[in-house]
Length: 206
Image 1: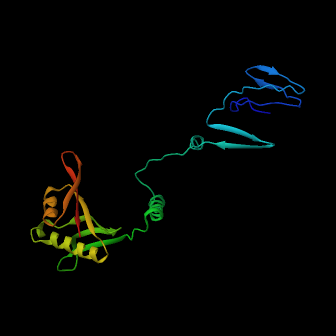
Image 2: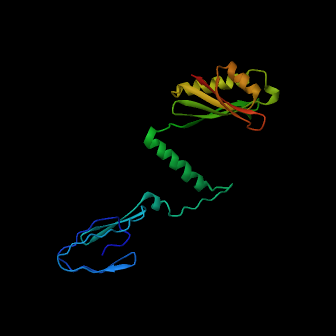
Image 3: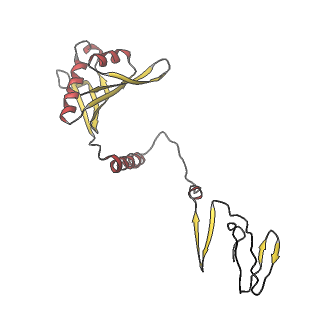
């Protein structure tokens, strides 16, 4: 029996006992070789029911599948497992589509006379680029060219790893001028981060 919501169809009915069909509140019964046509109301596009002999197949549209509820939870304390699932998922996705990243940490450390770390540069190399995340020199050691030496040391290591460029970002105007002296050029900025300051993106070919 065709459901009254099936797609609009013209159905010849020949040489069979017609079953009672309810449509729009009207019942009809036909016998013999009489072959009427039945206009059946269209089915909502989310739900299509087809009949193939005695087998019935149901196709659910993408929209309907997406109706399956997914909960979104916000937190400022994600677990290590939560972070690993998200990060590893993205890493594997990118690996399949653009190849391995060859990601490796990179650190250039400033040591005092006792061998203690007092400053330095932190970053990483990946996909042919040196990414400089943090550069810090104590105020009492500034003006001695240490920041420049840190950059040069990190860049030389990046070249040995096969990198062809380096990039960083800064909100410090003095740091921006230092990077410019070392060959970095601005390629973009984000205004008011924080309010009244600009986050400047800079890069350099190695």
